[in-house]
Length: 253
Image 1 (tube, rainbow, N blue to C red):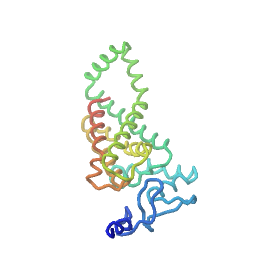
Image 2: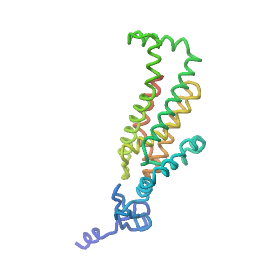
Image 3: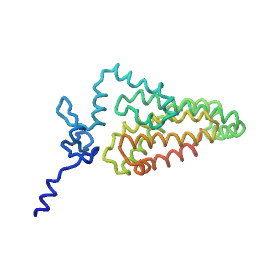
Image 4: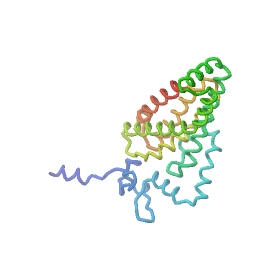
């Protein structure tokens, strides 16, 4: 009986500081927080450090939120030279439109670059494929090419949305206790779409660099924002790795 009572009163430990006793539970993600981790909103809600930073981001005036997102174009150097820092600096939980625009632009630029290399290095093969597809659709090759280019932004949105869903699935598989909303994974994938700029490198080399770098950024991001171990982060990107390989390697332009 004594042992049972002791187990009931044994203090719960802080998720961030195992040596400290928890005094509050985050009302957003359910994590346990000690005195140094806990923050309280004006409504009296307890939040962990991660959710508190998101809450503060939401509370900023629109002009401040817009300036906070200016890091996107300015941090390209960081993205390519220090992916770990780039992943840590991601502003998840903010406005969707700027991150969506950034992701779509990166994907479209990458696909156009890939098309350029195909035309320059594999013109005959490309012309044959276009003629075959156009004949199946009963349209001219010119009409097919116009349609294909017009649909590039929609294609980019579909890819980003699918990759976000796969990353969310992987995060659940990793056993994280800090699950995000789907929109946060969409933003993470959009920020990681900077890897599509590697398609400026010719053909298969560019595709492999894009895959490797995108997965590297996502690995760093889920490891940092979900506070996972390295092995858990690898588990989290398994569905995304499979999906990206199939779509990017098999789909082509």
